Image (cartoon, rainbow, N blue to C red):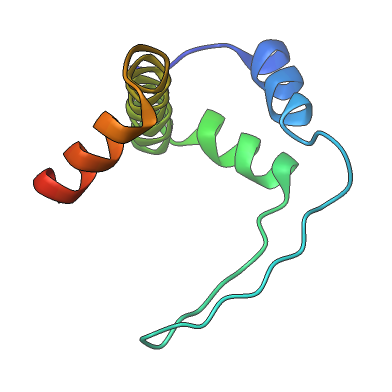
Length: 90
């Protein structure tokens, strides 16, 4: 399933770049290889490969569902109940 959202997705990807880049430190527990992906290259890949487009959109939909559930949980339950659930469930 391919979508022709060139203008919309381009605006969306650029809107995600809010403010200056963030800097943080992390310690890897296993060997890690990281690479910076140019936004224009990512858009070309998404438009040229249908499977990549499907995977990326599926990832975004799942991420959105998780963020929505987390926000609803945060708004509906007190911090004490959230802590108790986190300790009991995880």
